[in-house]
Length: 102
Image (cartoon, rainbow, N blue to C red; front, side):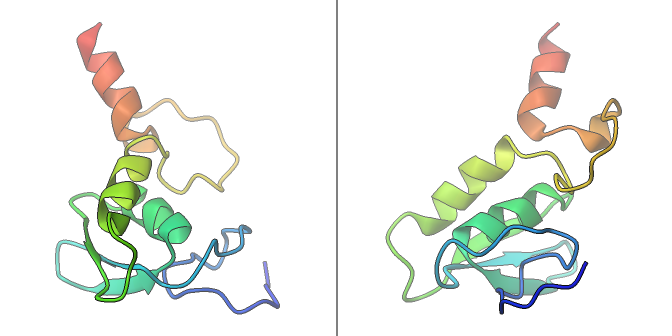
């Protein structure tokens, strides 16, 4: 899917959602490869990474990294993919915690 509007580097090419503001966080994977992003796309990227980390950019609003971390907890990996989600790797961290409690 091609997007005409310029989006942050954390936005996945197949994710159709627009940015919700300026780049506020850096999301890193386990090899320390990363991308800067708005809080919205930062959360979606973090949710799609196993072992990812998030850090606020120096000029970000207070609490940006915490908001992204908390939002990512309830987002399914690659949430823009419309497919049945039943395996733990396809569910959000919050959904997996609930499954583990039962």
